[in-house]
Image (tube, rainbow, N blue to C red; front, side, top):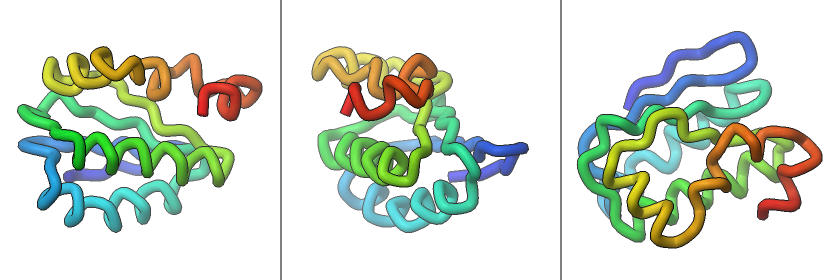
Length: 109
């Protein structure tokens, strides 16, 4: 995981696998990145080769935390594995820039 703070958002890049073990290690660091941002996180996930349901749970929990702080989590460039997983469960719109508008943030929970 690498982070690059911007003006009001933090760019987070994840590589490798997002599963139970790595998700547990990343959970705290993702929360810290979210807290350091003014409006949320931009996740760059093109380097993720695998994501299981535990990894997906980390992403969904991160999104819930962001919404409770009036922030957003946007997946900018999903890997094929992430794109397929989000599509299969119908959650791709939850991490899209269109859910970044304040009027839609809580409607898409």
